[in-house]
Every structure is written in C-alpha cells, then in structure tokens.
Amino acid sequence: MAKIKSTGTVDVELTFAELELIRRALGLVQNFGSVDDEWPARELLGDLSKVGG
Image (tube, rainbow, N blue to C red):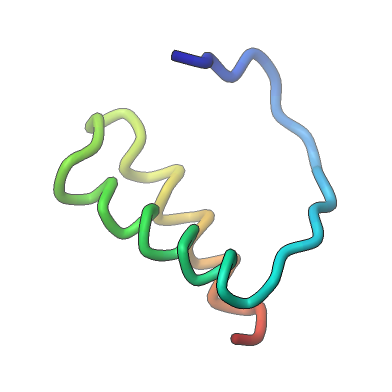
C-alpha cells in the first residue's frame, strides 16, 4: 500500500464521471476506512464539493 510522504498541490484533469467515483470512494472511507484517514477524506470531499458535477 502506498504511503503519503509529503503533501502539496496537484492539478489533475478528470471527467465528471471520474470525479463522482472519487467522491463515492471518499464517502466510503467514513464507513470502512482507517480512522486516521477519516478527516483528510472529509476535507478533500469538502474541497471537491466546490467543483461542478
């Protein structure tokens, strides 16, 4: 499994369908993911909610 060793900003082009899959996966973190991942997932999901789709 990959480990995040640093953070930064990444620009990625996604289709709306791909963005929706990411949103759904982040939602699953709350129910099935590691507790340590819950807040970062919520924060990213919040950021993604500002993106159209």
